[in-house]
Length: 158
Image 1 (tube, helix red, strand yellow):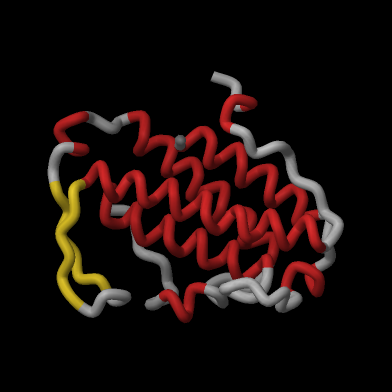
Image 2 (cartoon, rainbow, N blue to C red):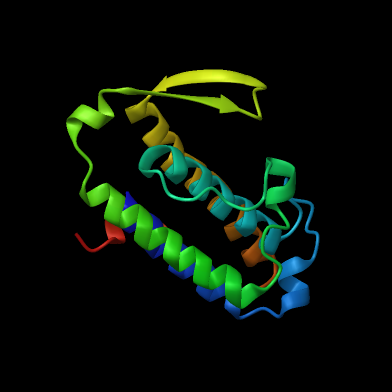
C-alpha cells in the first residue's frame, strides 16, 4: 500500500502540475475546497499518523482546520509530499507483526479525548484516508480538465 500510495500521489501531483496555481487553489465545493487545500490536508494527515507510528516530526499545522493552509507554495508542497511518501515507504519496509498486533494511544484533537486503537486498524486508516481524499482530488482534477493515471491497484508494478 505504501508503494501504491506513492505511485498515486505522483500521478495526482503530475495531473495537478498541468493546472496553474489559481486553478489548483480555486474553491471547487469539495470538503476542503480546493485541490491544493485537499492535498495539504492529506499530507498533514499522513504526517500526523507517521508521527504516531514512527516518531517522525508532527506537521507545523496544529489542527485539521489549519491543515488546509499548511503549505501555500505548490513546489514546496510537492517536495514535502515526496519526502512523506519516502518516509512512509521506509517505515513500511520495517513493519512487523508484533507492532501491528499492538495498540496505540494518543490524545485526539478531533475527538477531544484520549483514544486507543489497534495498530493494524490505524495503518488501514492511513491508507484509506489517502485513498478517500485522493478520490476527491481526482474528481476536482477531472472537472478542471486534467488527467491523472489509472487508479486501479492491479496496474501497480509488483
